[in-house]
Length: 363
Ligand code: COI
Image (cartoon, rainbow, N blue to C red):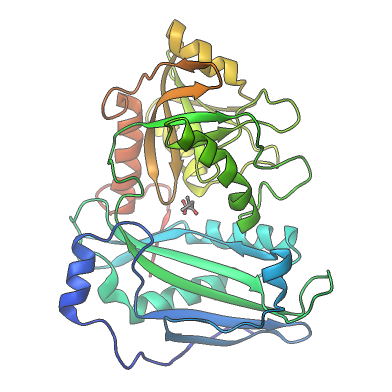
């Protein structure tokens, strides 16, 4: 039976003026709407108790399994306001399906796609005043569904009680520098994921494991770290929160293939589709880091960019590592192809271009 969401309205929602102040400069991930969605799964009972309720602290036991064994997964997608005032999301079914794959890997229960979509619709309906107006730059309502082992039990086994929630956060650009290229550090001491591990799942542990590499990058004056395959330290994987693309001088758009250790980005797969519309040849394969280091020098690599739901498409500039660096090809605002892909994606998301791929779902 599909989940329905009862509504418990917040008695003290943010006033119109406070909301307007936040929406005028939302930043990323710092402000939250008045409500959240939740549902519970109990072994033997399936999903139940769907509800929309005031956003606020949650209560779990100190023994809740998630706090000890990190049995947790999450998603990230956005709601966009179109010019006619309607609100749309971008490929939410792809997020629902990825969450199901992540759930299988983390031994969590799968949430059916219809229930996932129903939770987003119910939350956005009650908090629709929080979706930024059309034409206010790259602003949207970032939706963060997540699921965790809430059972109070210290034995190591899949939890018998699991909580699913969605919170929503008005969002501007992920990187405050706008299109300013990010500088990357090759993480040589820390891998993000290994063969047979959880690298392809959207689970908090992968992000936790990327932090030491990120810190090392920051210590070397970089914005982000790029992770290589853990077995040979030869092939490019991803940034920990974003996938990577290289644009070649002969119009190929190259990205690391999905080997099980890379997150299957929805933006990544959308860009591979859009590439064909833009006359580029998409190529998924193993990409040696040397190809980048040498390609930006000999001109065979023209542009590099990172992508993800939060960051959309972000130009990548200089690459640094212990004892060396490769120059930026990105100028001050990224290359021509990077900007064309970014515009093509945003135009579909904000309803400015025809949705020829059928990617938009009305919330
Ligand atoms: C997203 O792009 O939605 C993510 O989950 C990545 C994170 C860096 C915010």
